[in-house]
Length: 422
Image (cartoon, rainbow, N blue to C red; front, side, top):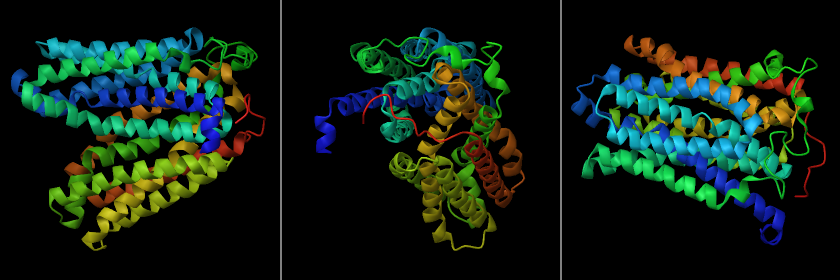
């Protein structure tokens, strides 16, 4: 620790990681800008659950499409500019929501928030990969994931708390204020988003864009690379599994183990807390193990096994909460290694000049997975197939294991000397 404090490069890395992590937390905060306000919006706009839920479908569809396209913007105009634009759009979406007087206004605010959210993964990971010394990337990705989870945790408390006291419009305006505050912080600390003393150039600093395209020079050449599609599939499968847990875990556990809804909800809380703990530990593991696919395979193997164990339905009910915590921890451990594996895939196939488009396309799988989860698991829940739902969680994680292992076998570990000393 003392060495880190006295190392100016380490201090700069910590500074950059903190700023990018804070921005990522704000983006996840805006994921849950609307859902906590549904009781008020449904009352004032005479909406049913389908109409209210469709607002989040709008958010994720726009975010998913936008994320795939935002990578090209990042590579062309720079990650810092894209990040500023995304935070600005989030701020505007909050104010637009506060002024909304019709369902179209609500949908427009949701779409604008989704568009703002779309830039974060390609911009954040491009900044981290270009600015942070390679030995500290595992910790950087761990903090990035943790900050997102904290943003999720803060959103409902902040929005519902203000709406209860001052109304949903005040909560929306306050969310817009959060976005403006983050924009001001980024402007104040803009130097932390640049690699050393260099500008955040579209070419990616010392890594020219020449390796970013194939021999034919096409900006879309990366779409012909199998590792890119495998990484994309990994995110679709794992987030579809998470989408089930996020949306349906309490009623599914209640139905499978005859628990009260309150006790079953503790299972979801335990899963989320376990995810945070696992992600923190995963950062240290990723920093020490070069072949991160081994961590992913083992961690998701544990997660899939626990999901199948829960699906069996014969365990005592008091096992549910600790097992949910353990499954969340296992999935969390895989997170930083997952992000490093995507980096390896990018470096082994296209190079640093295509960070934005690679990360943008691959991480758009997050939005597709979250958008697909209700379509996959909703009919199972309606039919009372709770055990089958948990079994499908295990199956999705098993497929994700296959994709990670295949990517690991096709891309080489990073043994090159970092651009900067640790």
